[in-house]
Image (cartoon, rainbow, N blue to C red; front, side):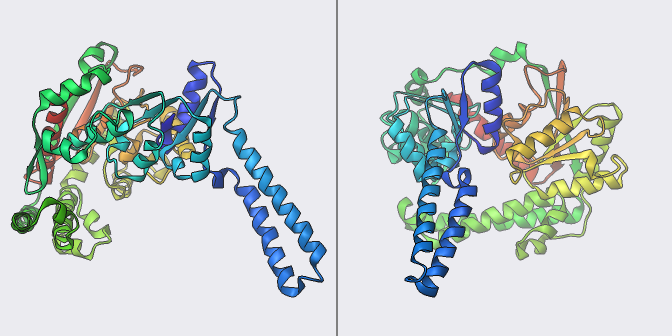
Length: 464
């Protein structure tokens, strides 16, 4: 069973809760044997020192250390192999563990028959290391993938998923893109032949739509709450979008002179693309809080400061205060980790909480154990009613006791938005209705983000 690193412990817990199987969490050889490896290094260091002083005079000591090193290496190897032995029915590992050649070698020798990939959309790009590692096992008898979001960006995501599950279904990526996507100057802008693609993949998919399981879930209400940029921020947003358009026009001029494959390796084309992405990011930061622009490592970001307070932060403070006053808990999503610092300070300054200990925080830097501790504290403590999370918490987090979720900024895809909302829309929720607030700054990049989500949602609607 291959999962995201943060979900290994949860999978182990669920296996023991619902089955009689024995499961083992597999980690890399280096991490499992770290204590033994430190002993080996210590002895190797002593050996080098003895050899340097006098190899002849220290012959016996050197031989003894050499024997100890060999024995320690055997212990390390034997201890690691035990993790894979027949006492275990299920092996649980994260995608990155398959980078370890020792792990891969053992798994190949064991000839695993059944592979289950949780959140299989994580291998949507067949050129990534995690996809290539898994592809080495795609001759297994049984392969399953689970995800609520098989298409995150565009239809090509399906190619990456089936590249592992059934590689003969779509043998060629270029042919797939040519047949099922629409392009504009080398960029995918839509889909085509959706019915054909749907018919091809249907025999290999079993699913439940949201509508089919809605009677098992609380009613989900999504509400947009609007705020306004200052006149200076509106002018700055317009400046950023004008610059984006100019860079896109330069790209389109280049696209008329080069083939698509030439553009992929063209440094100037990539530079233009980097400038587009940077300014779109700055536009989103401007809509969220200018403190993000100040905190950015990019010196370029400072050109877009107007010195105006964030109306979105003020809106968020009002909402959170009313939620906490009603005796409920609230989870707040943002794609920027720095927003957690900004909101934490804002909530303390506004008197909503007394100190940092009243707020739980999760981002990608938090390991699975600490993450679970923070979630348990938030879920059970009457003193902690606010959970600040990045998109690292979009899966594997059950907030069954939480009624309110705030999207401080919108997700960058419909798939990610679905995952976010799913944190509180749970079958075991204690609430009959859950509420998602989406904070939108008028005439800002937020409104562009909404259009992007709607466009990406259409792929899933038309194909799946």
